[in-house]
Length: 308
Image (tube, rainbow, N blue to C red):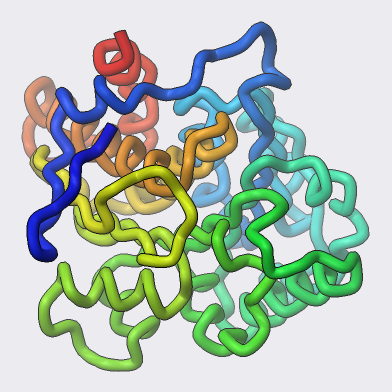
């Protein structure tokens, strides 16, 4: 279990802390480890959804569905045979629109964690998608009580969140955001000044757990047992600045959240595992040149070492 941070200083996420904050038991079957739905994967960028989905499974999630542009759904299903692949309406250029959620209605209803963003390539259509998801929950009578699946937002879905800030009440208490520094500036509407304070501000503004550049924050009003409100990853970041790395991080966090962790625990574990995987690959292959998909392959062994 985490310990309180002193006067705003972050709690360091060490292997010892994580061993005292163990992940849920794996259970008896895939259903007990949770279901993840990834919504993204435009025609030009289906790999982002694949990376996120594979990371969710590597983090221990039991079931995975990828909802992507319909022109690439079959290819995605073949590339990752462990997933279910659903096609969503797209524009003539292959961008996923905000229409057609009825096609994945049962998956939205049954998911334990929904990850929106990997592979979306149009910011305006990403906003349409978020509005459609929120309208669907409002029509179903969801209340602002934190009930329902966890919602993880990444990439263009983060920028879209700014424009639906007046209606994301149903997601309060179950949002996790994974911005890079540029996306953090969009969420704040200004340049970054002091990253720890800025991450805390994003967390409080959107009532979300936030993972950004090795810092994890939770909003002060979030009803979870963790005593800390700010954590810092202590592992290195060699080679993490590579294409697809953020998709792996978001997928790992979604997979851990689906397993029954709290939002802060999923973000702390997922961010640590992501960085530790990079360290491990750097020691074998060199500090640059390893691939994002190779990060996901390191997750099971790292979890075994930390959770025993």
